[in-house]
Length: 299
Ligand code: C5P
Image 1: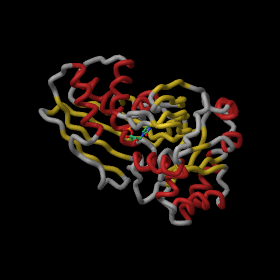
Image 2: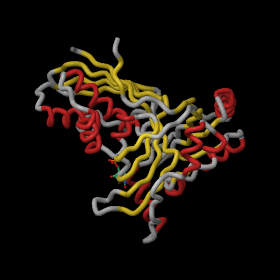
Image 3: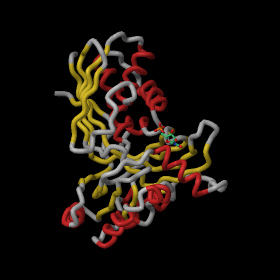
Image 4: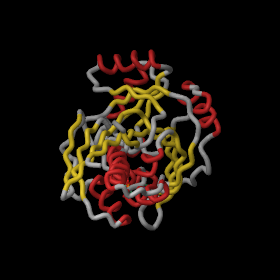
């Protein structure tokens, strides 16, 4: 095989509870991830050395194209455990906002793992892929699994839950927030008083997902990182206010932000909401969830 193409989704956190920080500097999480159909497309081709190029409709200037990129790190990690001597030339076409709280970089890493495994014929098991993924970043295992998952630990311990489809309007922002900075700002806001984590997501949230009840889901969306994201980027409050004015069922900061996501009742409502944001001059994406995790395109 000389070329492999893999797609990987963006994600939102329907619930994101952040607990205390551990000795390695990571926070204990209870989250509910849901993958959305905003896709990264990664192509890997046989090559004598690793290389990476990136295109897309998102702001690309802050993406490293060297060993600092998770794509190259993922390939090197796969090389280490498989002992494979080859390399690959990667190309990523990005649709997920960069530095936006939707785990686009993690999606690329998951896609790269699947791509080199197929390109090199190394047949890694899902367990091996998940282990490599959790070394690369807290959100990378979710990107392999996709759909809807409860995340515990750093977010890497996953448990699938059922969900019918939901419709969202995604409003990316023209700024990036650094995830470590958002977490450390939360620590500062909290002082010494990190609350204990709930042991499970609310039953009302799980029931809303199972039944596909957008109105009920709207009542259950929660994000502990919204307060620090708003502290660092106060201008996103006006985007959230627009969502309220335009009739979104709910609006929230996605993950560590600053992308904002708005829940619609159905596809028609989603279209009206997207038009409303568009008329106010916002760049928007329409998304539905849940979406498949990283997967190879066979063509
Ligand atoms: O795991 P990942 O490399 O994506 O995490 C990026 C940063 O986000 C970490 O270095 C840490 O500062 C913060 N983080 C955290 N707790 C988590 C996940 C991430 O504090 N559970």
